[in-house]
Image (cartoon, rainbow, N blue to C red; front, side, top):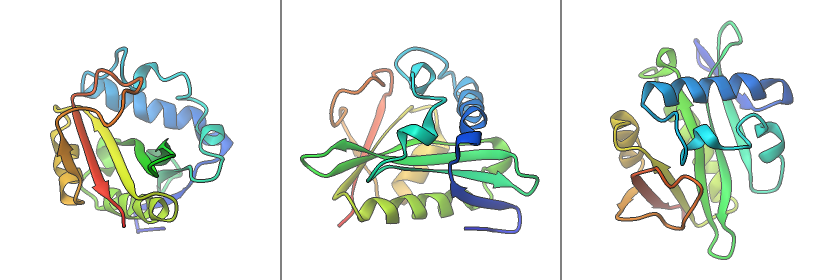
Length: 163
């Protein structure tokens, strides 16, 4: 998927460190550089391996110079109930407000529909634009986490029917 300024493609081995840097930059910006969030995820620099199986996928956003400026993934959260999670969706400031995140979300949800009935998201309340973005896509706010995950510091949870 491409626009004039950006291109979305599946992650490759060579992208792992750059994706980790994008996520860490965004987490620092929103005070998320702490335990209980993606910051402490041991798989942060291993996305090309983590997302290289059936029902899992991670995409990156490249700018026109080839720099990775964002990404998002779909991974299984609850296999029994066919619930996936939108994981590690982050964009640097240069990609925000350009519409490329909408393309990325649509791509992720279309992929998710092939394998899952629902999609879950955990995030932070101070990521206000992201929270509005999720609601725009029909994600419904939950009062508590769907299940306990290692991201115990998240304080906003959403779920969306995919069928």
